[in-house]
Length: 300
Image 1 (cartoon, rainbow, N blue to C red):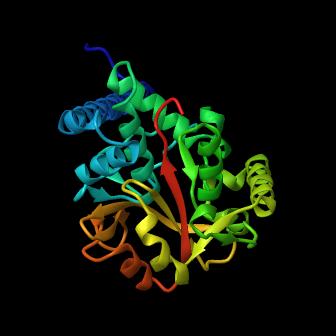
Image 2: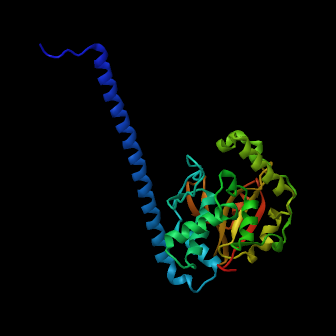
């Protein structure tokens, strides 16, 4: 007689087979994720090299601000993508030159512009500069080490010698509003589910609220726009309670017109405004003014 397979043994064998399939699918999924991540790295590096190739000849003869504007224009038409830094897992450096939100656009552009001035393998230099720009003191130490508020970003990057806050010198006035948006909307940030993270953000907000901060009021912008320079980074101040700025971009001086280059949520792409920066701000009722950061030369 042939060997007899009991019902129990059948399900043991079937269960083991199903487990093997599930493990195989899990492994395949992880391999696919790794392959995608590697493809994205190669894609970002290819974009990096292409931009450097395009800009390098001019980079030796112009200011850092001019380089920032030149680099920024290379990305016109690139896709807008919200929440590009909200990756799964522990806080880590996210590099994405394929799509941008308004903040990652100016950070990536500034880091790439600085890469053109610094020695070393461009891919490594770019990642190092991007981390320096994006995180407090240039060090990744969890979610709260990321510079979430533009006022914090500007202050920290001025300390690092990467930008200079020009706002007060451009007839800026004291901004006395309190900063508390993130802690007031804690449920909108999954990382703030942890009390320790929420407390750290609240401490940062308290510090920013008492720190001297300035903005150029909307009514004054037309009188100071001629003093803006190519590559000046702009934070658009907002009337939203508890928030310092609601959008960022950069100045591009195009002949006699000072335009605004930014990653636009409304159009879904990085765009250079057809009209002027002043015209753009006039169209946005919640824009109460601007904060201006001027890129500095490396080594300053």
